[in-house]
Image (cartoon, rainbow, N blue to C red; front, side, top):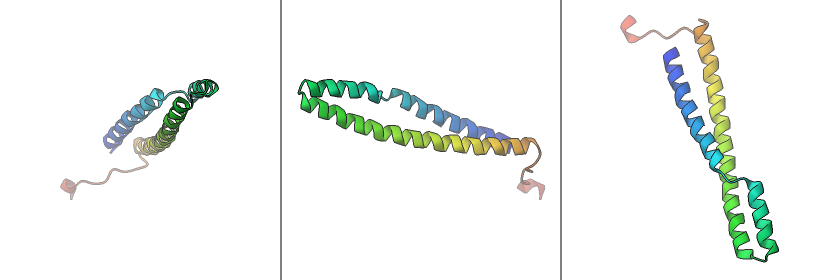
Length: 100
């Protein structure tokens, strides 16, 4: 049981690493804001609109990734608590078919 929990935790940690890497790849919204303002000031409306649309997509992605990160961290915490209970003997592993 503990080995299964550890495997699940490892899998979730790998997924969490991928989510964090994707978050790191996103463009900083403040730097984009500065660029858009400069484009508007230069009356380059089409370019500013394009960057705004791209940033809206990134914001959606940022929100989705944050939700995914929160979910993965919650699952990891639940598994950690299970592992502690198993290691403290509070949870007994179920009997296998060969023991019947």
